[in-house]
Amino acid sequence: MGNNPDATTVIDRYAVMGYPVSHSRSPVIHRLFAVQTGENLQYELLEVAPDKLATAIRQFAKTGGKGLNITLPHKSEVTRLVDDMSERASNAGAVNTLVFRDGEIFGDNTDGVGFLRDLQSNLGLELEDANILILGAGGATRGIIAPLLDVKPKSLLIANRTMSRAKSLAEHFSTQGPVTACRFEDVRNPPVYDLVVNATSAGLKGEMPPYPEDAIGEDTVCYDLSYSMKATPFASWAAEHGAARSVMGWGMLVEQAAESFYLWRGVRPDTAQVLKQLSITA
Ligand code: ATR
Image 1 (cartoon, rainbow, N blue to C red):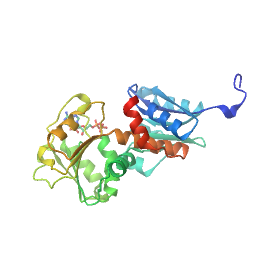
Image 2: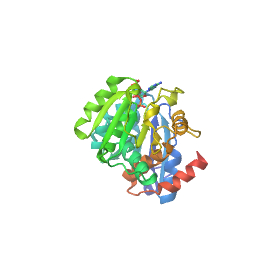
Image 3: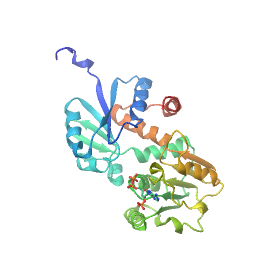
Image 4: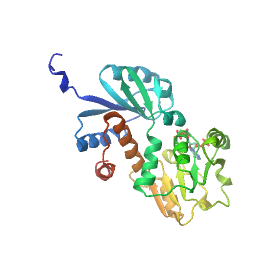
C-alpha cells in the first residue's frame, strides 16, 4: 500500500468516457452533487478512442473504478460490453451509465428518465393525452420514445429528413403506443402540438433544417435536446415562431446525471440547486 496504509481512505472513482470529451459538463455536475450530498468521490474526464473503449473500461474497473458515464460516440457500442443491461437501456439501444458491481458490468440509460423529469417536475408539463412531435430519428430520438409513450400521450409523431429511419423507429415502438412517422415537409395540418422536441444533430453542425413552422401554436412548448450557453438555432427558431416556451436541454443534462449519481451512491441530489450553480460555473 506504500504511501497509503489505510485502505479505507481510498476515494471511489467515477469518470465520463467520450471522444472527444473535453466539452463535457459531467465532471462539474457530479462534483457539485458530491459536495452537496457529502459523498466522498472523485470524477474524471477520460478521452477514449472507439478502438480503445473495451480496454479502457476494463482497466478503469480493475483500478478501483466504481462507475462510468459513457457519452458520444460510444453509447451504442457499449451495449455490447456489458454483462447485464436495464430494460430502459435496451429500449434505447444505448447505455450512458455503467455500474461496476461484484466483478460485473451493469449498463443503464438515464437519459429518458432525465428528460421526463425535466419536462414533468421542472417545467410542470402534463403529457398525458398530449400531441408530441419529435424532429429527428437518430440515437437521441430512440432514447426518448419509450419514456414518452409511458406517459400515455394522444399521439407521438417522428418527423425526419430521411423517412426510412423515422419509419423503422415508429415500427419498432408501435406495440408500446400511438407512434407514427413522416418527413419534415409532411407535418401539415397538424393537431396543435403540445410539445415539439428537436432531437436532430443539425444545430451541433451549425445546420438549420426546414423545421415545420405549422407545428407551433401559441401553447406549444419547444424543447431542444441540445444545449449551449447561447440559444441553439432550434431554440431561436422556436421562439421566433411563437412557441409558448422554448427550452434547451440543460435540465435533462442535470437530471440524467442525478439519476446516474443515484444508481452509484443511493442518494438523490437536489438538481434545482445544481442547475442554478451550473449557469454560473459552466
Ligand atoms: P444522434 O445519435 O445524435 O441522434 P444520429 O443518429 O446521427 O445522431 O442522428 C442525427 C439525426 O439528426 C438524424 O435524424 C438526422 O437526419 P437523417 O436521418 O435524415 O440523417 C438529423 N440531422 C442531422 N443533420 C441534419 C440536417 N442538416 N437536416 C435535417 N436533419 C438532420
